[in-house]
Amino acid sequence: MDWLIAIFLGALQGATEFLPISSSAHLRIAGLFLPGAEDPGATFTAITQIGTELAVVLFFWRDIVRIISKWFGALGGKVAKDDPDVKMGWLVIIGTIPIVVAGVLFQSLIRDQLRSLWITATVLIVFGLILGAADIWGRRVKTLETITYRDGLLVGVGQVLALIPGVSRSGATVTVGRALGYERPAAAKYAFLLAIPAVFGSGLYETYQAFTEPSSIGLGWGPTIVATLVAFVVGLVVIKWLMAFISRRSFAPFVLYRIALGAVLLVLLAAGWIQPL
Image (tube, rainbow, N blue to C red; front, top):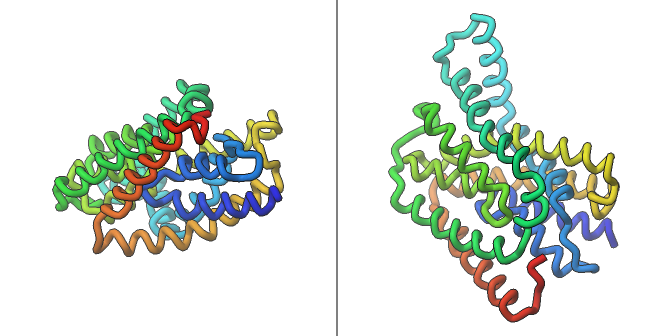
């Protein structure tokens, strides 16, 4: 049974990681209806996110290789420091700092108190509305080539909010990007590139923790690895679809979905049919 649950959760992780609807919230909610009705946990979520982040690396492989090679080339004086790819390398580094600091300072809060379904339901609705507002009223003229270090840092600050289940990493970062006036594809691409070091860092740290505290991984190593592989395959399909979708459509369907899901959760919690922790 654990293997079937792992496949389901891996598919769910891959399907929701890149959409602005919060993969961690969906894994948290799914745990309520699985045999044993247990939260898969922050460790399982972080490890399976490695799979979806590998999908990002594969999808943007040429961009990533070019950015890294030029960034190191600039350090050696072989590439101009004002090269756009060199700048993007620094933007990813600068934008990652806020979530690293927050992850270290608030680790216990992230793993325990913030996983309350009351919080998840509330932020699904609130940040859904914020995303909708930013998408509608945000200017749509800035491209990825024009992104500034200030804007990159602000998007990085937005990524910190993704530590709360229900906010959504892509949702938070894209919302800030849209509010700052960036086109949807530009906001999404920077959001995905920015997530790479944060997600891999978190996933590798939780993997280490799982070795030292085996009970923290919940389903066990075998099913978790399978879930991560499934998340990679499904995530690759979803990211290709999403980048094509947002080039011609708004985020409105995701906003409506977030509000509906959050409202259903609040009703279930208020009725006592599900427990917040």
